[in-house]
Length: 131
Image 1 (cartoon, rainbow, N blue to C red):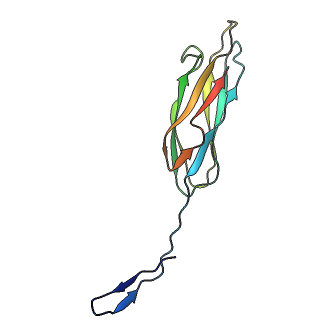
Image 2: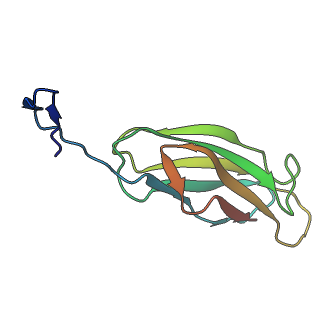
Image 3: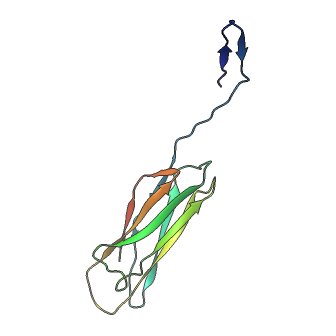
């Protein structure tokens, strides 16, 4: 709580009404790694993006996929989307389609990254998907 005191050149004083100020730390976003079995027909990798605690502000984050050893359109389908967390909302999911094939191959990776974050910070900017 704050109050202001003003004094003029005749030493007259005036006090303001109390002003209440509340402050909060930015919410923290996180995303976890995923491991899926690609199989012959494909599957989905589902990523959960979470806020560590409820926020009183709307949080916005862009979610994008990036190639690792896996390639867009050959091994998975790229995703680029914006998520909006309204106050008190704690989690959302993003689904990345993983393309199956008949080839026997080593495990491959791609990344799902959080970028252009508004009203939050990130605990971890990218998750790894293993297929």
